[in-house]
Length: 348
Ligand code: MRU
Image (cartoon, rainbow, N blue to C red; front, side, top):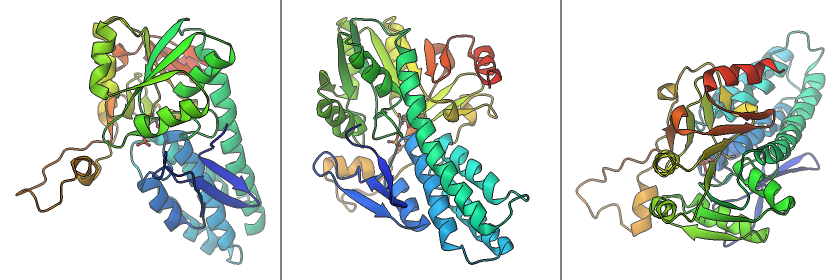
C-alpha cells in the first residue's frame, strides 16, 4: 500500500505520524517503550491491528536494550514493559493479544539464552506484522461473497492501511472490490471528534483513486432514507463471544439507522480481534478520552465555562443482533454468532 502505518526497516521501527495527516506525511522513528506509549495514546499510530503490531515491535526493541542482562533480570524488565504497554489503550484487544504473544516468548522457561530469545522475539514481531497483512488480503476477498455489486457503502472511522499491517479490514473489503473491478462508491463518515474518517479515510481513498464522498456522521441516516446506500461496513476493536462488537464511537448509531432502513451491516476484523473470554459487549472496557478532543473543535479555551463536563467515550458497542455478517480471514460468519464464532475457532 502507498502509506503503511508502520515500517520495520534496518532493525528500526518507523510510524507515519497520523496526527499530522492529511497535511503532512512524516515518518518518525520509535526508539523505546515510552515513545511507543506516547505515540499510541496520542493516536500517532492507531487502529486495533496496527497498535498490536506496534506493541510487538516495541517489545522486541526493548528486549534488545537488555541484551547484556541475565535471564532473570531480562524477564523482569520486559514484564514491566509488558504491563506498562498493556495499559496504553484499553478497548482494542489486539494490543493485549500481541503483547501476550511476545510475553510467551520471553517467559518461556525452555529458552536457551537471552540472545536466542531476542532473536525469537524479532521473528515473532515480523510475523505478527506479515500475518496481519495476509489476513487483511484474505478478509478483503472473503467480503466479496456478501457485499452487493453495484456497491454504495458507508464506512466509519479508518480501517485501511493506516490502521493495520496491510490494506485494512473494512477498507480491505473495499480495496478487494476495486481490484475486482466492481462498481463501488464509498461514503465516508467524518467520525467525530477526531476525524479518522474525514482526515484519514477520505485521504486514503483519494490516494488510491477510489470514488468517495465525505459526510458528517449525522448525515448517514438521511442518506439511507434517500436510498443512496445499500450497505454499511466497519471494523472492530474487540468482538466478544456473543458477537457484540466494540468499534469507534458512532458505529452503534450507524448500525441502528441501517437496521431501521433494512440495510445490511458488515463488520470486518481478523481473528486477533476476537476476545472469547468475555460473554457480551457490556464487559468490554471503553476508553474515555480527554474533554479537550471535543472542546478543541469549537476553539473553546479551558477557562470559558464554569466547568467542562464532557462525555467522550472513544468506542461504543454494537449488539450482535444489529450485525448481518462478520468478515474474517477464515471466512464470513452469520447469526447465531455465539455458535458461528465457536466454529470459526475450531478451524485451527
Ligand atoms: O481510536 P482509533 O482511531 O484507534 O479507532 C480505530 C477504530 O475504531 C477502527 O475502526 C478499529 O480499530 C478497526 S481498524 C482495522
